[in-house]
Length: 200
Image 1: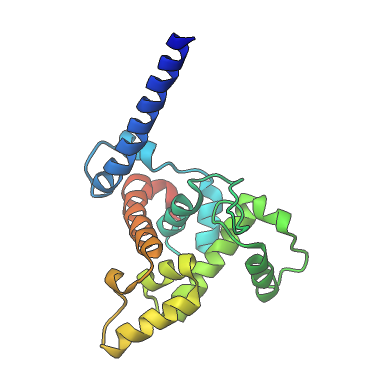
Image 2 (image 1 turned 135 degrees about the vertical axis):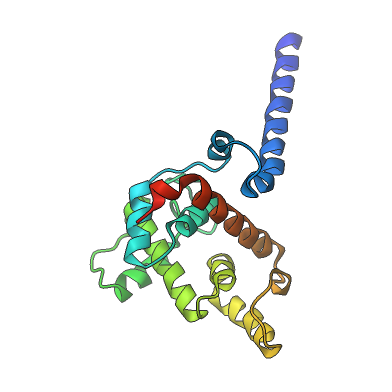
């Protein structure tokens, strides 16, 4: 029994060390350090057709869509947040229902969000809307995916009053700052490692 407990303890330590290594290595790999296979292990890519379709439909960079999926769900189409967000791009059912109305959908149900194509289409719709609202400011659009457009409007207003675009240091929420950094870093990796597969 003692041997089993010690073995389980060692296994837990190895797993914790591996998770720590991935967290530590992520920024290095995003900067182009490390081999392609290792970057593919840290930054996986699934549901390529759904990503390409959503990006094409809403005139987005497919690498950006993949990066948001990476940050939101790590490509788990069954992911659910404590707030009720669903699927690859963690879309809230009420947000999706509104998007469905605005985009001409007539038969939306919350269960639709478990379909990767629909989930990515709705998440991409929101990203396109945010980019349009914020005049193409990628940092502001990505921040709004995490914190909401209202909060970003306030931060952007303060930045614009000083004659500049939104900077990471203008974002007061630590979670949102980290989220924006993660998405922008992942976007670089998805462009470099999967550029051919993601091309629309």
